[in-house]
Length: 365
Ligand code: ATP
Ligand code: MG
Image (tube, rainbow, N blue to C red; front, top):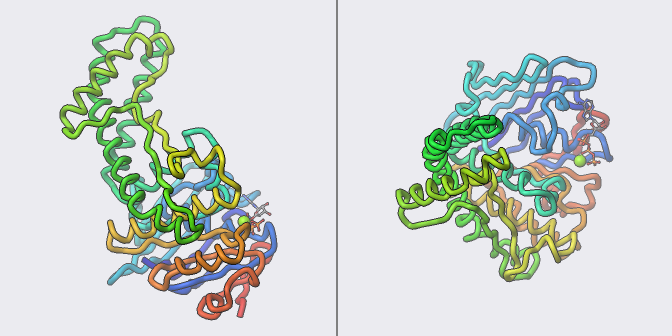
């Protein structure tokens, strides 16, 4: 898919931005703090209704304004769709082709984007919540069913946690909740397992091509036990949840389920976050994002939009050249940089170049 047009009103440091994008490569140049990342972030928000950064929606609205609008026109194989999202004090509204969409789950997964930014590197160093958010955001783009299951799951876990806070806890009632939780937990587990296995089929080759090191993998960590048979998995999960009833009543919080999941990257069976260099960590996350582009294209038949925030910094020239091979004509790509000299001349030649200066855009060539 291709985002042809992007329009921003009162978004971050933009009063108004109106930009026609190239269907292949776009390069956004600008000094620090001019609004390059903000443009990529806005496309991400247009797709997923929230930022990949840990920020409240109101941070997306320009200082001093009370609403913000992001609009985009997106071309699929043989049709166009217009997306619009309005963020204000009263909440968030999303529209497709000017029609209000009531349920976020009907909106998300229409527009697919993969973003790489230095924020993503935190994924390797921070707590598991960041990694779960990543899994949820990515799988949500691939499956509407996952969005719905996840919403149901979050609701029931919230309900259970509220119940666990009470003084007189009825174990039978907990078991009733556990039955439902087990079904949803197994569904979520299987989606995540499938996603990680599919990524693993591609990830190590990409990392090898960029860095020349073999053996990169993602290892999924869950307290749900895997069995080949789904019904058995659900039964085992119910048993486990019920075994934890007493402990959970004591701790007053639910301890078992995919809301406690995590994953790590391993390089030849060693956890990368404990021993890799900064450049390696960056390339690991970048390889993950490039693997996702292939996965999304294979699973949906449409290539996602690839947003690469400042990818060439911190990489030596050999790695840069290896990486350039992954910037493909059949994937619409938007790259930001502070220095056009960082980007290979051949790429610049075929790209649309834009200059950003203090929230204003100018043609770059
Ligand atoms: P760098 O090269 O350092 O990554 P950048 O061009 O990517 O810079 P952005 O992060 O896109 O810069 O934009 C940062 C600017 O946006 C900052 O000047 C910041 O103050 C401004 N900004 C962020 N949020 C808002 C907001 N809600 N209202 C107004 N300005 C904002
Ligand atoms: Mg930036």
